Length: 244
Image (cartoon, rainbow, N blue to C red):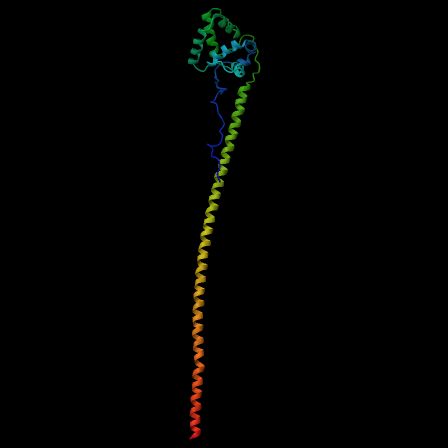
């Protein structure tokens, strides 16, 4: 019975841990921006061009339109200094108006360009809640979908492992059954050989009995002839006596 191996089955496509839609999610030390009412409202109301800029500063790419806003609101800070340095280098390339708009979105109080750039890099390293902010619930739909997909993948892997285990048991049982059939066949062959030998022995015994019967019949046939000759001789002797 031919079955598909695990390599032949369609394995689920996995993204690296923390990666959603090709974007590596960071597990930074700050607040999740989506849980801040002030920042969430500000970011949600900004232009698409500004969202692209923010996404580039956070993830070094513009991201897809479908996932861009969710990726920004789920951001909670960088994980290392190298990421902070890349963000700062990118900020230095932006014009004054863009830097000012970013500072206003994240509620920074700095007013000078250099101070705003340093303040933005520091904020993105570890986002902090603005004054008089309200904590709101943020549902990370992409993360929920990722977790749900990972759950389904694990269940699928478990099913595949169970199928492999069942197939191994089936193969073992089939091998045992085949071995048992071979033993039965060998026993049958031996039994047929014994039967053939017995039949040959019986035929030989029958032939020997037939030969003995023939010999006996020949002997019996010869006995009456002797008696007849003896009686004739006796008759001749008696006739001679009578003559005398």
